[in-house]
Image (cartoon, rainbow, N blue to C red; front, side, top):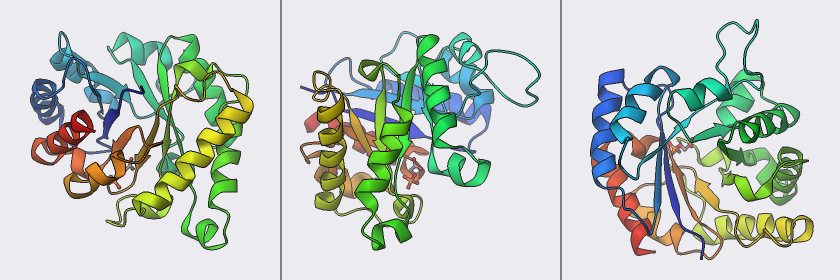
Length: 248
Ligand code: PGA
C-alpha cells in the first residue's frame, strides 16, 4: 500500500561530474513504479543531478535548507532555490545537522513548514543516541522529535526517516525487529494524532543499510524504505538496495 522509497544521502562526497555520472547510472535502475528512488547530492551539484535525472523516475533531494527564502543569511540555501535547481525533496533534521550544526527540533519544524509552503517534500530525520537507547528512552526520544517536527504541518506531504544515531556510518545496523519496534511506535503516534493519515506516511529506516541487510529491514511491516549513506555512493552497492525494495 505504501510505495517504498530508497533515498541516497551522499553527504559531503563526490564532485559535480561524479554526481552527474552516478545519478545517470541510478536513474537507469530506477523503476517507473514499485519503488521511488531519490538521491541527495551536495547542494552545488543539485542542478547537474536534476539534469541527469530529468525525464527519468529518479528524484532529487537537497540535504539541507534554511527556512527563509532570501535575505542576509550568508552561506545558506532556500526552499525556493532548491526547487529552482530541480529538486523535489529535502532532508531535514539529519542527526549530523543536529549534532554538528546545532539544528533544533523547533528549527526542523520551521524548515518543514517552509519546504511544504514551496511544494517540496521534507524527509524528516529522527533518531536516538546510544545513551538514550541504553537508558530505555529510544521510543520516547523519537516520538518527541516527531511531535516537534510535525507540529502544525501537513502530515500527508512528508516522509519520515528513523535513523538511530549509533547506527549511522558505524556499520552497526539496528536489528530488524528493533527497528520495526520504533517504526511501529512512530506509526502508533501518527495514529493517535493524525489517524486518517497514519497508514499512508512512509517511514524510512537509515543507519548502515547495505545490500546484505536491506531485504530483511524492508520486510518489516512498518519499514517503508531506506535512507542510505555510505552504500549510496556507488551504483554497485545502491542499485541492489533499490532492487530489494522493488522485490519487497
Ligand atoms: P549510513 O548513513 O548509511 O552511512 O549509515 C545513513 C545516513 O546518515 O543517512
